[in-house]
Image (cartoon, rainbow, N blue to C red; front, side):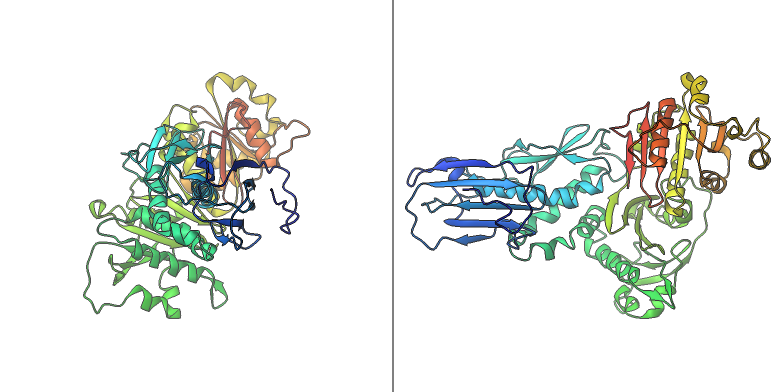
Length: 517
């Protein structure tokens, strides 16, 4: 019989939908063959039994049994009346209820720790059947990745999103590599995750996925974990009343055994102030031994896949591409950023890790055709995100220029023909230059002005700090509603002050063209 959430001390789950399996002693069906004789199974955050942890029946099984499952995101409660139940092993044709529970466990962990890596992604509601011959991780189509924890599992979950994932052979770290790292990390932990220490293990899970995704034969995952953990410790501390900003980098330059280690430096207060986190860093070899201190300056390389303030650190990672340097930064907001090959690949913001693939966003933007303009818009969004100013940008397509006046509320916001002080000042600053030809720092300061920044399909700056006509009764916030309104002209992008970036195209509100962090 189904145990209600009220009986378990929980609020009723309105969306819980039970699935019932019935069988008789001596003639169990496939679904009723489980690992052990069970009377009651409880798991989830409340009550405290972890998923897959059994309380064994004390009475001799004798009667027919009924198994019912009710599930929502927070808890799952099951009861099995006494019955003689035959054990079943993973991967057998009688995989049964234990297989059902392992799938639910993998789904729960994936929802919590894998899906957030990819903005706009979700798990499909149903798994797909799988055989031992199929790979643990594989593309199902350009927008879907199927995965399972073990080759023996007879199912695969499916991760999907509206925009395509990067190709597996991409020169950047593709999303499928992160899913593969997730599977490699969860495999050895599967038994522990079914025990009472489940949440203790999961508390360190995301950082292990990050380290595994960036590891190589030369650079062990444990080295990257040490770096992430050191920055995490510094992020929770102050030095003389101020938050700590720091950067460390790992490169292939082996040091002698007696060299000072990262752990030794991290154990002392002085280590926290040896770098500023933007253009200085401490260099270590791939085994955490100190190489030296680096003062960085941009050489003019095209570093666009990170915020400008972190570009010197990102460029440092390009100096030895064959051996893949990796840099980690901690900023004063407590965020941890990970760089490789000149790109910011991972970011931990507000305690949650995100994975960034930059080139696909340019494709998903769609408008304008000029990739240099799209790249400038994307750079500016990253700069506004990490400066915490927020922004709202619109790109007007060539076929919708005539509709611009229906969206911008005041003629004074078209600074080319306005005589307000703001308009005159902006004309004086930018002259006749197009948006993508402006200094990157100036672009970031212009979009920080309250209101929307609007550019044309060929890069002309049309309006700065513009007030838009928003339909009444809009359920979203002002900046999001403005971005959605601008998308009717081509592309609308919202950069929130907490760092998230979301873009819309052609008036589509429900399915963003792209999401970052």
